[in-house]
Amino acid sequence: SFLAQGISGLWGRTKLDSVGMQRLQELVGKLASTGTPLVAGGAVLVGGYYAVSNTIYTVDAGHMAIKYHRLSGISTTTYREGVHFRLPWLERPIVFDVKARPHTMTSLTGSKDLQMVNISLRTLCKPDAAKLPEIYRTLGPDYDEKVLPSIVNEVLKSVVAQYNASQLILQRELVSGMIRQRLTQRAADFNILLDDVAITHLNFSPEYEKAVEQKQVAQQQAERARFTVLKALEEKKRTIINAEGESQSAQMIGAAMTSNPGFIELRRIQAAKDIATLLSKSANRLVLSTDSLLLNLMSGGPTQLDAEYASTTTKKK
Image 1 (cartoon, rainbow, N blue to C red):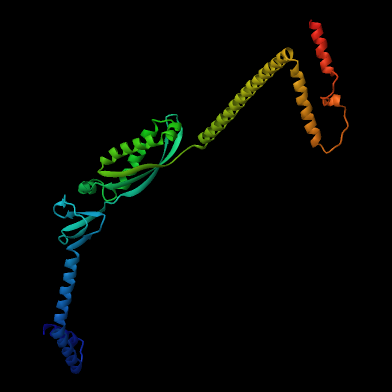
Image 2 (cartoon, one colour; image 1 turned 135 degrees about the vertical axis):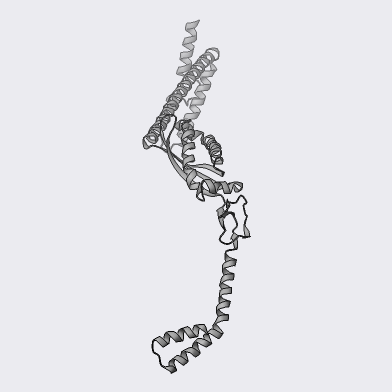
């Protein structure tokens, strides 16, 4: 063959002996007769693998793809998950992740009363599936990293500036709703959809937090002082009521003593009963006068109180 002749000529120029040249020609002949089919089969397998791998591509779940054509550019057709075909070398698939992805961003801004607020916002965003060609053409595959930081800072600063520091705490749900509405509108300008927007962290400067704490302490002290004043007023009212009751009781007792002399004797009997009860429960043995203890209830003669009542009645007559 031509290959054998070329090799023989080369070896001939190197002055090989006739025996070595004959063996080399036999080896080259065998390779030429059996190696051609092997080489052809390997070339077919390699070509087939290249054609299949560059003709078929797969789109995973939660992803969508568009095609870039070397002649016509970005195609307007989108491809969902599954197996799809393309032209080798001419077409190239561009796969987008269309699942909602979380992004947390922090912004330092000022409130309406000039207090510095450090606010963190968490968003769930995804691209508009119908606008993937336009997103790739204008922003690229990393659209969220290019757009979200700027529009989030813009919306946070514009919304927070409309509220005082206290309103940001008390009306947090209202503030979050306004931020979500404006951020959704701004993201729609870039063909980005927002599934959720939430304020995850909100704090103020250390000086403001200290002032708020001092204010709360002062309010608690004022409430305590107000309670003390109310308590004193109630004590005053109770004392007045008790005094009025005692005065009325004294007047009623005086009227009863004037109209009914037996009232004094009834009170003396009650006092004697109480004294006798106390002495009966005492462990000590005492010997006291019955007149001093008002226990001479069965005596026939008049007592000192009866004499005083009789003298008062005589004077009135």
